[in-house]
Image 1 (cartoon, rainbow, N blue to C red):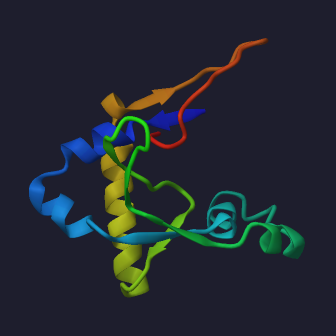
Image 2 (image 1 turned 60 degrees about the vertical axis):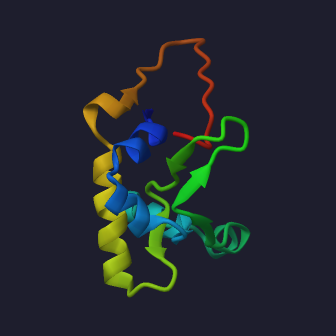
Image 3 (image 1 turned 135 degrees about the vertical axis):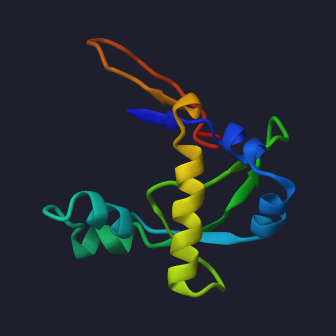
Length: 122
């Protein structure tokens, strides 16, 4: 299991990047990420209907801390209002910035372990 510090990823962006992505919304699609990672085990039609694509802001403000962070990941397929290929390229570039060794934690599971995290900023 891996986690990325999405606060840190956002904070590393320069002002030009922050202005570029402010107000953008990404469509998150479980079927898209599942197909990329597990092509041999695609979602069923019932699963696709139960988990339809949804859009979220690319930059979120955490409701409790007030800090801004990137809100992306494997499920983010494209950017609303942008040509598909351009949006994919932007998502890939931002994801590459976020998955940096000093912003990433990889957990090696052991028996009887419990791990808690805040999904709103990782």
